[in-house]
Length: 331
Image 1: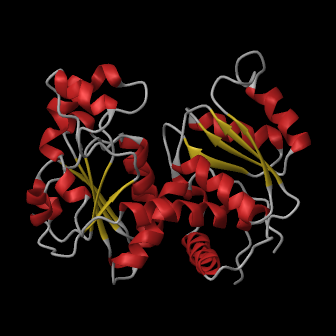
Image 2: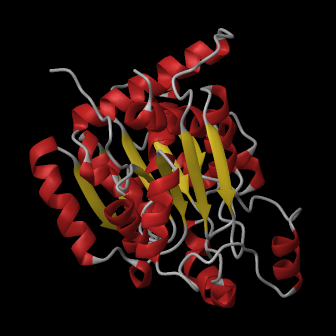
């Protein structure tokens, strides 16, 4: 049966069937191949897209802007603190205004309810560029990267997420793995365990897809991993929690010794970036001076042959372009 996502919002992978996610991955791979062949695109010609960012970004903004431009669309970027959105004007009123100007909206910010309200009141397809609860475009890029580097179908792949297992990346991975019938282990301290309601949601989906999703605090879950994944230990606005996070999460730092526990000489390391893997950033250096090593992955791993983080970063472009083309494209 043919898949059509025309007019759909992209708020969470939980809204999509495995077949629809497969369609997006295949479309992303096709768009990537066309770009590498030097083929010019016009699948978004004449479209106007709003990029609404309440949080700063590098890869997400670049991917939406470059992807839209390469397919002929025009974008308006509204960054943090430069509009009346959710300040002097309600989310509902702003969304209704945006609906009169644009063909689609990308949102990167805080609550999942914000991106949902934008979709509800604008009448447009809305794309989730990151919220506190989810990061679905990142997972699409990650799945594409896995298919390029791991010689197994996704349903046979095991992903282990190391660190804070109740942050948006851990949850996004649970959603993606549940939908695609994959094996996933959230490996972290019990103090930072996933919310039970999230585990219940993915368990319900897993019954239909054959996925296996678990939370573990012991390193036995590392055995047989095809992919090791992590994220920074303190997100934007959580800097005051760094001392406690370092105490809790240092045992889950990705090191060469941890990689060896997988028993897989070809294990892949992925990271959504930015990453603290050395002390060349202002924050890592300042925290080191205070006695805190905030690196979630050692530099040796980050720069090793196991790492595909820059292929993964590039794939943000192709995955995001696929979402835009599938939902508002001239196809």
